[in-house]
Image: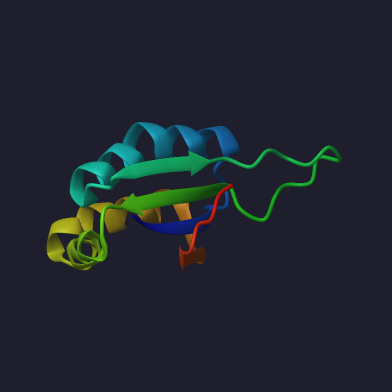
Amino acid sequence: MIKTIAMMKRKPGLSREEFIRHYEEHHAPLGQRLLGFARYVRNYPEPRPDGTEPPFDVISEFWFESKEALDRALAINASPQAQVLREDEARFIDMSTLVALRVDERAT
C-alpha cells in the first residue's frame, strides 16, 4: 500500500462549515470517482482551546494499492479528464497553502 497526505487551507471568505460541506458533498466524491483511491480519509482539525485556528483546514489521506495505481492517479490528475477536479479545487481551496507528501506510514 502507498499512502500520500495533503494539507490544505480554505479560501478566504469561506467558513469552516462551508469548506467541510463542499469537500464532503462535492469534492471527495468527485476525486474518488476520477482517481479511485483504495482508501480516502479527510481529517478536519478543530480550533485550539484558545480559539486559534489550526494552520490547515483539512489533512487528507489517500491510499493506493501499488506504485502503479499511484502513478495512474497522478497521470489522470494531470490530464484534461481531471480539469473538473482542478477547477473545483480552485473554488474552495487556497492552493498556495497546499502541502502534499508521499509518506512511509508505520503503526504499532
